[in-house]
Length: 133
Image: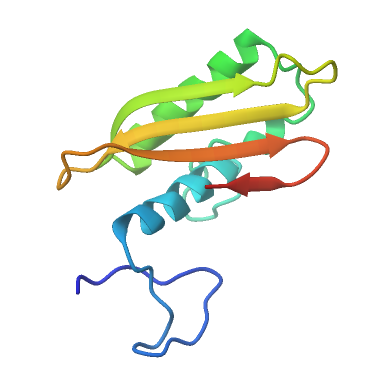
């Protein structure tokens, strides 16, 4: 079994000191979620790290803002997760709703050891909580 990094939050593991991710997709999902939700300046060791989705919370949910978010995601992934081959980044909203509070981020990527692509999705409902798949 290949070795993967520890799960967060840290918990005592059965087979190792800490619980570990069981597969690459789970590990990458953690890295992507962390990259998207960390605000620049929040990581003391690298103040440029992070997309900082929270700073967009009270912005209008319009095409220009979604395009800016997509650009920031692309720049951050290329700098901090260069081993991911990003095939597509989609930042969309539920435009059928009168009060449009939902922001959906979908990143389609591949890893060097895989010929198949994977999908990471993160939904941000400004009225509720943040969830990812």
